[in-house]
Length: 312
Image (tube, rainbow, N blue to C red; front, side, top):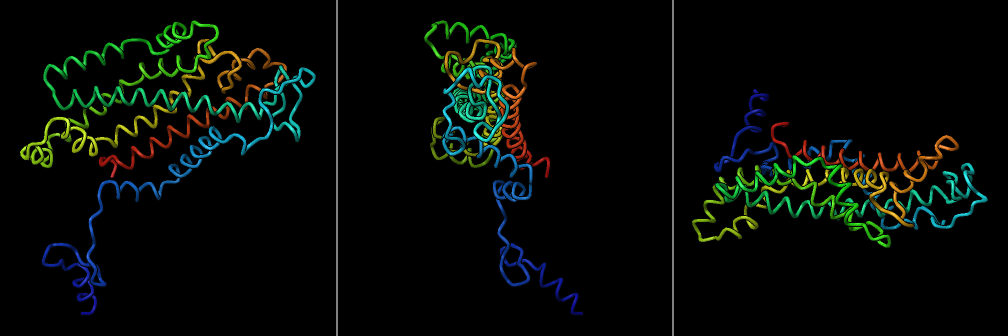
């Protein structure tokens, strides 16, 4: 009898239909964001990726916390010397501290990836929202534009465009690479935003806002965007890691950063011809680059899995 009473007491709803917990308190339903956070809290991949991303960001903006050495202080007398207490990763062919250059190289790599992702995000956001909200000939026209950009080989187009934009020998190539990656990598974000807007604009709250006289701009940016942005943000998180990798690829091919700029791509490019003499100057920037890209991709995947209702 006591078992029946305890089960009944735990499951009886209130008059409003809200379940009552055994202690008499009502259980409030969680939102999609709340459910996603609960999943992320229990996901060790999310925490590992978040720690790595935070470490890279701190390293990029505050390199002095990790090393006091000057990455541009080079001496040929130290050429290809091995690791020591003053240089954890040894020296490269110019006698520069590989550890210091690896730490300071994070700044350009992360900043280029960040600015390029912002440009791609703005373009993808505007194109995707316009295509999804207006539909019809606007959607068809923008969709053909997306198809045209997708039909262009990304790496080949990036090489041509970056070389053209940084033709000036005095140009460091920073903004040329940023603009190149930004205008070539927005298509996936635009497609994701388009599908999210199409799904969101059919919801009841959008119809109610339209009946109250809300215009297209208010509907798109005040009502639809906050409810359609989650998948788009996930795509941008993954894209940030991809852009960091692509910057290193362009720099390795000689069309990215140049001059005395410091980045992982520059160090990998300059160390490659001497890999038979010593592999350390090539290995460590490559390891830091790979771990950074992997961290952003893992972070994006974890957030995507948490917000995807089909995986619940």
